[in-house]
Image (tube, rainbow, N blue to C red):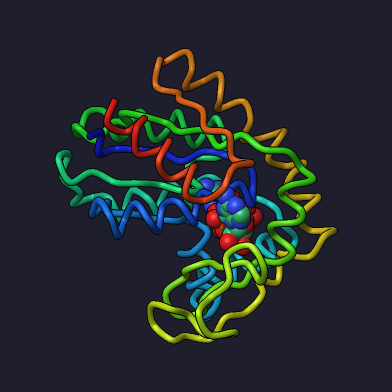
Length: 216
Ligand code: AP5
């Protein structure tokens, strides 16, 4: 199974949901730059204060800020343990800089799984999303409900709606995705690292197709 993997796709395509399951079932070292940034905002750190306006508006945090976070977190990573990223890289500049940093360290990306889905589907999923404030696990009020309403199944943390999950901000995030992140599909296809999963299917089907691709 490949161990250095990127999940790529629009907001709401299911990257976080599948990543959490892969972490539990396969022991992946999962990281989400969005989750890290929200933690910094909640802590009120200098970095969080710098990032908060970008998050609220649904805009991308500057490349150098995100790259510094990722390099710091992966500086002691081991090639065989690897990483599973959801939400990074999401600009060509981030992708190129990460290739240049990771390859000489033996941490180069082995596989990119692209979750393909439409804007209409994303809107429905994101407006019903609820996230755990403690561990970051995500649910959906009707599609992926928790056992007990408003409480996380894993840690009993409170489930809340993200401030950037309103319809107008999601539409903006989708536009930014098309402009800044979609070009990564061709970038990784040219490197022969890209595989595609139809993200309009159920979580179980997405999960099993992703597992098969990782083991191919
Ligand atoms: P981030 O947290 O990364 O958000 P995102 O990429 O916009 O993706 P989402 O978390 O919204 O969606 P997802 O694909 O993980 O879907 P999920 O599994 O939750 O980034 C937030 C912000 O941080 C950015 O806007 C930016 O400001 C900043 N940022 C982060 N990384 C950055 C970077 N690298 N550079 C610059 N800025 C960065 O699923 C969504 C919902 O659908 C859930 O409710 C779930 O339960 C449900 N669901 C999922 N799959 C299915 C399914 N198959 N069937 C039914 N329901 C499903």
